[in-house]
Amino acid sequence: MSRPGEPEPGYRLLELVQVMDTLRRKCPWDARQTHDSLTPYLLEETYEAVDALTTGDQAALREELGDVLLQVMFHARVAEERTDGTGYTIDDVAGGIIDKLTRRHPHVFGDVTVSGSDEVKRNWDQIKAAERAAANAGGSVSALDGVPLHQPALSLAAQLLRRAERAGVPADLAGPPAELAGVPAELAGMPAELAGAEDAVGDAGRSDLGQELFGLVQRARAVGLDPELELRSAALAYADRVRAWEATQHRS
Image (tube, rainbow, N blue to C red; front, side, top):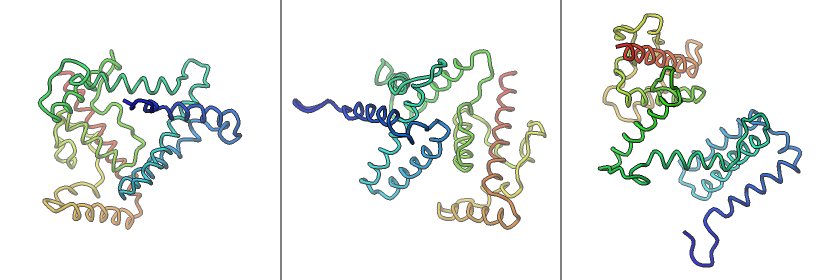
């Protein structure tokens, strides 16, 4: 809430909408941009914001967050121009996240009582799973639905494992092929370079784990392999194994 005589919080966001509209109409470069042409900038600005966050430079972080916000505004403005029924506005974007936050925080906006942050997270996951099931009514539902497959391979692998763990997927599905009991052979492939890496690290500290990962990159390069593609292949093979396991659970 604002103090008496001060503007309401967010008033400059309305000004930004107007600036974006003016640029789209009057700037030749801004006018010709599309979702596809803007995609690299969305990724770049996000990484720059993360860099600023990591360094602790608050002035830089504020600037980079503005650049990320610009990308959100830009994509929404491009979408607003569509006339094929798929268009939406920045208000639709804001409305969607408002609805989601309200729906997934029943302990704040409803009458649900929670014991702490752990229960908040469990409720969030359960509500999200129910939303996925409703969106896929009549079709197959997986704990991995919605995981962006085009993200960097390391974050992809981490997100797949995190989602699977929350859903109760057996941990041994991530192990070497010999340990994948009951999984179809065609879904059990895993690059040998990655098999057993977790055991090799053991109880070592974070710096040792980082060095182990770095060593795997070196090994991949030494034999002429792209470590990003190798890890992506392993992550996608793991996703296939998880979905195959989920299918057996649905049949039982």
